[in-house]
Image (tube, rainbow, N blue to C red):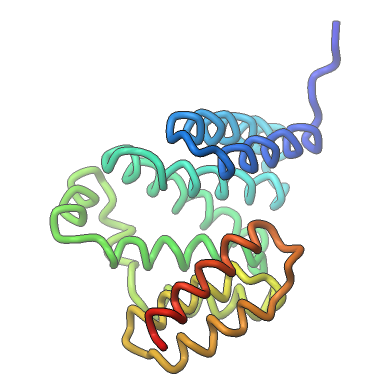
Amino acid sequence: MPAAPNTDSLLRAVRTHLDRGWGAADEKERVRHYREAEALAREAVERTPRDPDARWWLVASLGLRAQEESIGARIRLGRALHGEALALLEMAPDHPGGHHAMGRLHAGVLRRGRLARWLVKAMGGDEILKEASWERAEGHLRRAVELEPDAPHHRVELARILEARGREDEARTMARSALAASDEAPLASWYKGWAREILARLE
């Protein structure tokens, strides 16, 4: 009888599914990989509940899956992501991924229209709505940049927040700094492309 997978092997499988989902052109294929990644990440968290790395990959899986699902599913996944990101930061207050996730979550809620916010409230997301603010979103992303300065994804998300707040000079500076960040970071080429789009809008 084969041995049950350990946490490390589970997380390697999570990363594989996330990579494949990210690279898939077909929406159903992306969702399939993200759901599989989430299931494996949950198993890893169940095995090692105090492991920040396992918790982070669950947060990442939830976040990517939420981008592809219906509005109702997005709200449910957002609530789950909120809880997991809080748990991650409770056990590892300086985890850059935890701050990145919280910053994106705050900004994502604030970018929604009135109907979407009403749905969030109707589906039990009052806590997220009450907490969401541009100041908190910016604070979390700035902390992520401080903790992981060579990762372009933190800088791009912060640039998006600065742009949304009308601080275009700061947004341009942050987007340019993302282009100068490491090419070895996860999804670096995609995020650098996003940084170029931000600069094109603001130049």
